[in-house]
Image 1: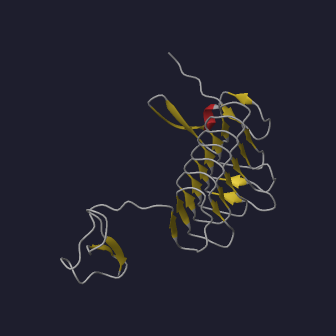
Image 2 (image 1 turned 135 degrees about the vertical axis):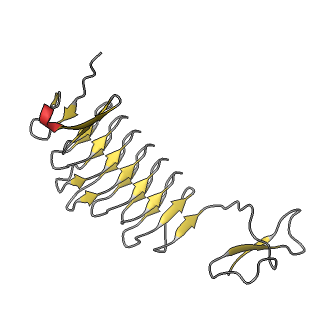
Image 3 (image 1 turned 60 degrees about the vertical axis):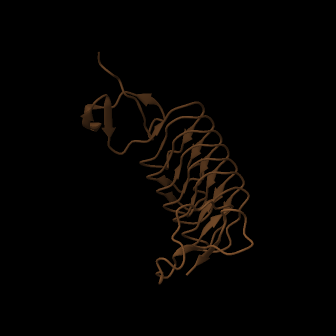
Length: 199
């Protein structure tokens, strides 16, 4: 049984079967197309100024409504998620899902896995989920795990809580390389607890 694949065209902003010249290759039940912009789901919008970008599902998600263009980016699903391009383009951005997450304009290589109300305003940053997390502009290479965190330092992982298991115990493997996290049992800690040190 033949399978028909549709794609979104920037010129007509309409759906139609791809022309044979646009089919690059076929694998099992899947086509790869060249220079197309895709959108599925309900009331999702991919702007005409965006290329090589897609929305795979969900509702009320948008890519590139500011006019500068969003390139090589995608939203997998969720609701009310935005990859913005107001006044400046955005590239290589990914939102996995969730609700009301935003990757701001003038960024590249940033991603939000899920959660709600999260926002990234610089490049090479990530938020793994949670709610109400912010990576402000001026803090590249910043990553957040948790909820309610506003990043304060570039090139840093911000974590709300950390449960660390299987750490080396001082002094068994001393000396440690710089940056090693290790455990050092001392009196006064909770049962089976220890302090963590960074060398």
